[in-house]
Structure formats: C-alpha cells, structure tokens
Image (cartoon, helix red, strand yellow):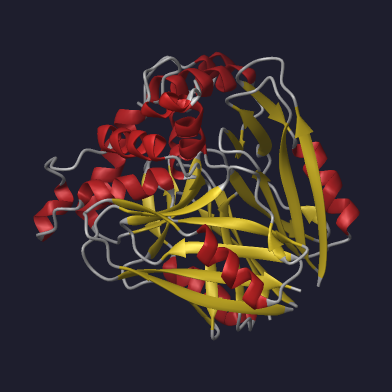
Length: 137
Length: 137
Length: 137
C-alpha cells in the first residue's frame, strides 16, 4: 500500500470564500504514485468545508446566499457567549460537510465532467488548512 | 491491496427519483474479493446524490418534499443565466452529499438492519452515472 | 494492509443527544497499529449521525435547535403511517450525514485543533451502534 499526505494552507481576504482546489488535489494524486485508491480531502477546521460541485460563479453566489438563509450570519447564537461571532460558520460547515472522498482510477482522480473540488471558507481572514490523504496501490 | 471499480448507469423517467442500489453495491463488493476494506459510492454528477437511509416509500416522499422546501425547483437562481434550469438540483445535492463510504467486514457490506443505499436523482431524464470503488484486502 | 474494526454501543437517556467519541475513535486508531491510512466512523442506524465539529456546549444547543427548525419533531410525516414517530430523525440524519472519514498520519488521528468527533442521536432511548473501520499500513 502507498500513501501520500499534503496540507493546503488558506488565508482568505473575505469572511466567506469558495476556492477551486481541483488542480491541487489532482497534483497530489499524481505525486502519490497511487494507481487505484481513495483520496480524502478534509478541512482541518470546523468553520470550513470541502465539497464537490460546479465551477460556475452564478451557482457559487446562489450557494452562498442559500447557506446564509439556512444559517444566517449575525444571529444571536449561544456559541457567541464564548466571545466568538462565527456560530453561522459552524452550521454552514455542517450542511456542506468538512470533507469529501474521491476515487482514483488508472493513476488519476476519477471525476465526472462537471465535478470540481472546492474549499469553502466560512470564517476566513486567518491561516487555516486542509489535508489531502491518498491511499492505494 | 485489492481494488475493484464499477460504474452504474441511470436514466430516470422523472426529473427526481430515488433508486435503491443496495443490491448492486453489495454485488460489487462480493465480486471484489475484498474481506476487510472500504467501499466508496459516489455520483459522478453534481445534481445527484448517494445516501444511506430507509427503504420506506412514505419517508422517500417526505425526503423529496422536504428537499424541495429547502431548495425549491423553479426559483430564479443566478445559475439559470447559463441557460440551465437546475439550480435547485445543485443545492439538493449539497444537502444530501454526492457520496457515501461503506465498511466491508468479512467479505460483506457491514450495514445496520435498516440501512439501504440510494442514488438520488435531482435532474434526470438523461444518462448519468455513479462509481463504486472498493479497496481493501 | 492492516485493518481494524470496532463497534461502539449507545443507549441514550434522551431522544436527542450529542456524544463526544473522539477519545474512543483515537483509541481504536492506536490499537489498529495503522501509521498511514483512513478511519471511517459511521452510524449503523438511519436516525443517528457522526460528525466533526466543536466540543462547545452552547454550540451543541445551537445545532440541536437549528436541526429541529429545519426538520421539526412532531410534524405529521408520511413516514408515520408505518407507526413510527421519528420522521424528523431521518431528515436530521440526512443533513448531518451518518458518517465521517478521518485521516491517520504517523499512527494518530490527524485532526485540527478544534475538531472533535460526535455521535449525534436523534431517536434514542434504545441500544444503537456505530462502526469504526480503520485501514492502512
């Protein structure tokens, strides 16, 4: 069995940002030398997500607006008694999930034609990271 | 390490459909010869999901109605400026997630008594597919 | 390739409970002897979830209230025609997902500083279980 680990660092300019990391994940898979296996991509924070969907800017704005309607920023969450103001970011993370697992076939990410991998930041403007863990053969 | 890959094709009669694929995933696991491992089942599209829940028709109708209340079909999404009409299907996919990972123990899917695996189509009536990727030993 | 399987049993006092299982998952990983790999933690029921987020009680109350606003207990779901009263628990499970996959690096769970693993019970007061499946090398 082979394995390969990489950490991606982010420090977004805005509180919320959606960053296409498909090329970076793909490069990690190539580097791993794994021909058949699985690739986990997971945010290492609880106010960010990794998801697979369309690289279309209109949709990304739809997603952002929709998430904020389901888990609004600025609401008076109990979590804010700790001094934080990011209760919404925790809930947005739960909807979107902090991770995705991708198949590797013949040495490449085995994605459908429109599948792009995104890191979704919900409480940015500081250094945060995600992990890529490839295992297989 | 062993690995095994299969693609499942779907072409639903309706825009939205929920298809029980437990037997097909189970057969792929048997075929793989893997005794201990993991089985990823992932939609290769961004308007379909794979999830684990109950094979009960009333609940499936509840799920469909509930998803459409959270991400309504027919709303004027920004994504529709591209000519698409499936913005809701992308958001439904995000709630339900496009994939699930299943444990394999003693050569079989290690599921609880009520766990069934579903392919959920949110924008059907065309050929789409899912991948099954088994790895283990 | 190495693999290791454990089952965690739960029997909560309340219908809904959020149980921190980070130490139990971590112990299973140590026991597995796996240095590099993946650890799947999955509820074996369709009315419970496994998720990664903050071990902060205010936030956990926020999560519980928020889930119940998105998928209310006591609503007249079609699923209740079967005699069940847990339609909400199925929908809460779908939002939260029944599973998570965690990276293992250098023999330990490779988690960020605030990532805690939770078993979320949405229909408790009976014996239920989750599976931990570790694979790697």
